Amino acid sequence: MKKLLLLLPIALFAVAASAQETKPAAAAPAEDPAALLDKVSYFYGTDVARSFHENAVEIKLESFIEGLRNTLEKKPGKYTPQELDAAMNQFAQQMVAKQQKEMSEAGTKNKEEGEKFIAANGKREGVTTTKSGLQYEVIKKGDGKIPTASDTVTVHYHGTLVNGKVFDSSVERGEPASFPVNGVIPGWVEALQLMPVGSKWKLAIPSALAYGERGAGKDIGPNSALIFEVELLSIGAAK
Image (cartoon, rainbow, N blue to C red; front, side):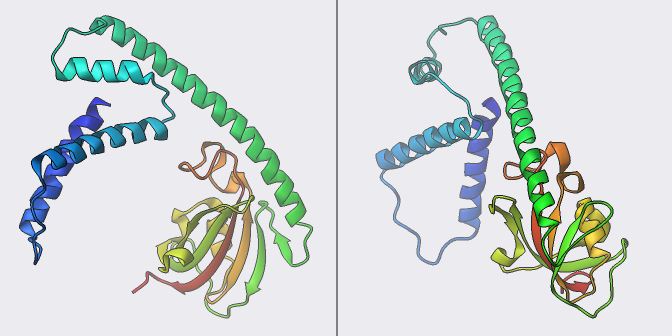
């Protein structure tokens, strides 16, 4: 939290400096000092509170305000530094244990859902299952060259979890993506080396060929099977 509070002023000063360098055509009238102070203070409050939410940290508001006030007013602390260090060490251990438990439970749930989906999907007409367990369905046939592992490709894609939640989509961004074939998850590496340019396939990727037990970010949990619609636009980076 100390790092957060220290970095915020730096970011604000950088924004202010940038604003001075790129002066707008019509400068806005200066804010009333009292109103400006109120907004800046409110910003700090909302930013700290947001970090608590994002990290699932529960606090006692009265104690938080008391600590804030005592520090700002340079009053004696309610607890010694040693007491606070011991409390934070214990709290950190509890948070790690909680996260590990949540990851384990989520991993078990995602694995069961993923395996159930892959098993059912493999029975659908038009779905091909490879030796590795990758599944693909041809939406549009292409007649271009097939990439190799050393190629760079440009694609459009739309990625969802088995429950339909979108976690990434170049289609929604309106801009295709370019990357090395061998620089992505195993399911993609395999699929791209089977697709002729101009093809559009629907992929069902078991978690072992995706991000496995570690997951990826906040949207792709551990042991998550992934679904992609992939259109191979060209071999080579987008111009």
